Image (cartoon, one colour):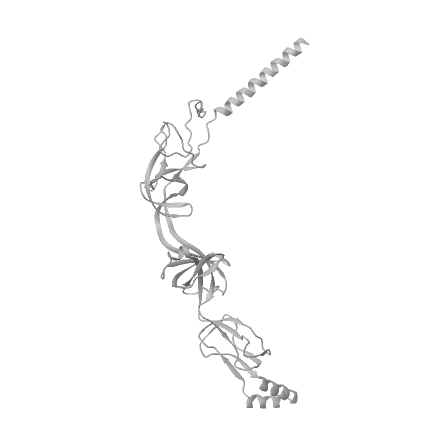
Length: 331
């Protein structure tokens, strides 16, 4: 029994020693850095006013019959380009339709005699443009209130811009347009008109901004939803860093953290910035292409004490054992 007890005690001591050794190894591992080095890169950047809108006709005209009667022939369909004065359809008045129906019962010769004697009424295009709607079929009875066709001289994009942003938009401004229906296609346009009367949408005043696209893509359709970016500034080649690397001081100046010399802590450097877009910001001064900045992996935490640099991102300075230094008592 005593021998067994001694063996058990030895085993327990060995297990405890192994566990202590494993814990020591875990604790002695160096902490993962809380900031990563990112090189300053050269790339495009732009400052935009974003809005939504839709594809609409610049001038939409509904074509209606001058008299009541019946549609005999339709000569054009949706999507066709027509010129002003071109015949779109033929119709019979109510009287002619009744006479032709009676003649048809008497035979083809009688029908032809009345067709030659009683001519149909033409429906003509009031302007040159594109047919965007055909609303009737052959044989349909219509009256002067019936819409036969709808026409558009050209399609534009009408964007709705909040009143807080409309002051940044001006005539001639370049615009990038992406339709929800075709998200992989970008179209360039220009502002040609800003409406004078706003409208209240969910307690926000919005102003219509008309955008001309030339040429109009063949896939544009009236009422398609568009995402619009009014381009205020655009630079094809700019020095760029992540916004997360930037710190703004109380006096409005900007700083970034750059790696220090071997064995030295990171150092702060003042920079001048330009356009900010998304997660990138333009650098106008203080850095060059190929320089390196530190980007925080976690939220910025101010460091206290003589060892901290003017700008830190929670970078811990390890002691010789590899462990982070313990806080002073009372802190």
